[in-house]
Image (tube, rainbow, N blue to C red; front, side, top):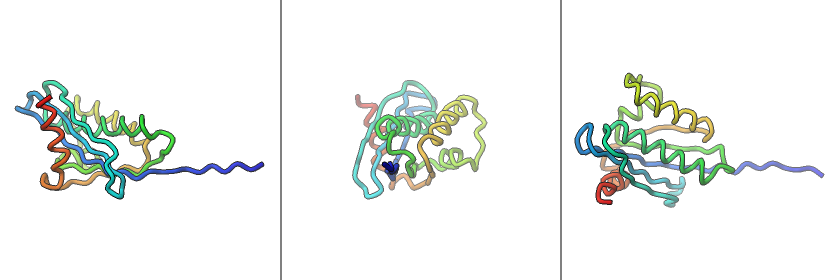
Length: 144
């Protein structure tokens, strides 16, 4: 009997954002995961304590990746597009800009390990107006 292995990859678009009231200050992250067709699969926003806006931005990506790895592990490899309104974070995660801060490098290393398990990951920068849902989730987290 022949067995056929079929891989069911999933395509995701993840909008992420981080917020900090002061820099550093009380901070939060927000993200929304959608299918390539636009169906909302999950959204989340949480406070993360006192930190910088960049840490909050990176944490949003990290938490979204953790969710996908937990929820859809059998469907990997995936195609994932991460959309953020922070050009700096997009360029750093894409490897085009260097990260000088040691505490950000720690988060970057975790993200890069997850990328390997996830599949194909790309990053794209957009204006804040095009990232309003992730921004709203990050800012609503302060109300919890």
